[in-house]
Length: 188
Image 1: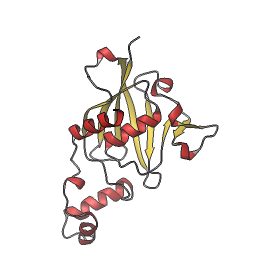
Image 2: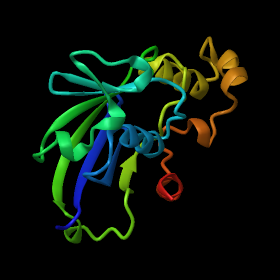
Image 3: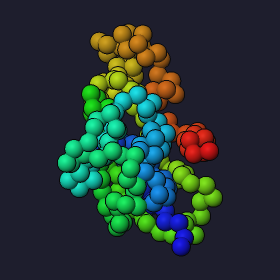
Image 4: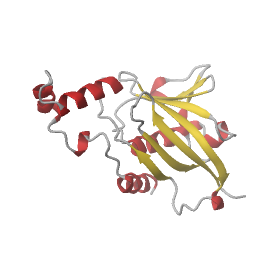
């Protein structure tokens, strides 16, 4: 039987313009492995706890423990849980800053129907990942606003903390090659 591939579209909730990525993974990918892939695809630094919310169940880092509604993300695969395209589920990262992502399963198909030579692979995306530990999406936008406007009351402070507005804080920056190089390194 042919390997099953999932085409996923992940978007960072409340981002405007939307920060999103489209990528392919196999159905054998554990949710723990999917977390590692999302960290690369989105551009996060893997410094915080995470969880997936699929239906009424939570799947997370083993550090969160397990219960009647929470399972260890390393023991379940995407293929175990998601059987139909157009399914949505949530990925939460950094419970302090509260980065919530919506994941849409766009397609589920046998591998020969996708032209990707290597999996996982990111196909496209838009927008830069916010910086870690900035106070969530609204804190990120406050930093960008302060850095862009020299007359902003916090401009000097933000420039001292974050530096001049460069590629690290360019809200439109997305490097597809960097993402795919790092995905290859993750699974090799």
